[in-house]
Length: 389
Image (cartoon, rainbow, N blue to C red; front, side):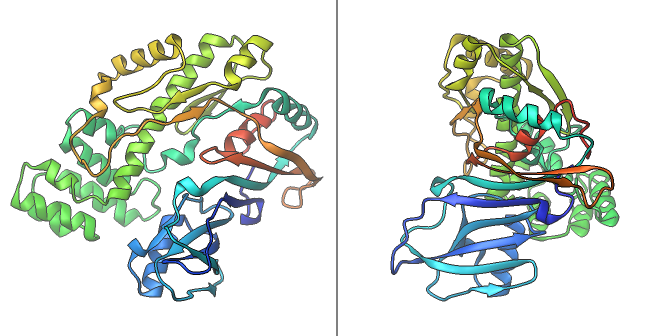
């Protein structure tokens, strides 16, 4: 069990910041809990009476934990403040806004609880230091995706703009505990094409813009999709690209490794090796696989052929990713490492679990590169130990 309390999951962003004495952008260290980064940025914009576009960050940090990251605000004013759920501390200036390119990685301090025995964990940690672990995108990447509805980006690539719009509207409330809001969306879908009724049911600026567009242009679903904020489209595209990358890695692992452990998660099955022979370890150690785009560079014929099979099964082609729809956002391929070694992996404490009598807890510290998921490492080291959720 992880993230039982916010203090169990502490993350600190590692960034290379070109600080200057004076610049257009003021840099802040932002520490928060019980907030996602986008939600807190929107709150800050209202609180500070500034445009959300004036605030920039490099990475989206989870709400379940205590996280520290860097943001910039395009203003000379000092907005430093201390609140119960977040703090904002000015540390200098930059001549450019904060971006993902400035992030090198993240440091983690994670408490794993409700363990029956620590011995399997110790053994797995030794294996990880030798053989690493697979760099899958974890479930957090797919929040807002309903597997039954499919992927927003998949619908767009196929030209199913009507379906994409319905997926977007229904996906906004997947994790919502607001029963009335879920019922409202259900009623919108039930009244689909009755745009006056849908507009009456709409809540929030984006929904209202969507249905006002459809009221004026009843069958122009692409025009309606254009009303979705760019950031939300980018997140939906990234989720689909990550899904395809994960599937390519799954198939490659099955081709190369006979003995794999499976863990069923919300977004699919994750595969883990325990050990690797020297040849396979050397193959995976430097291997990078491309994320989807119209142009991709594969490390070998095996990975390319596996990916072609995935595209065929999904009725897609490389050219499908050169979509002209929603041109504000597009697919860019980048190379992602297959095998990771956590840096400075250490056990900082092993103890009796104060939250679970007669059970044990382990505190780990380590660092991972940008885009890697600490929860994937946790899954690996909990192999052969019952995973509590």
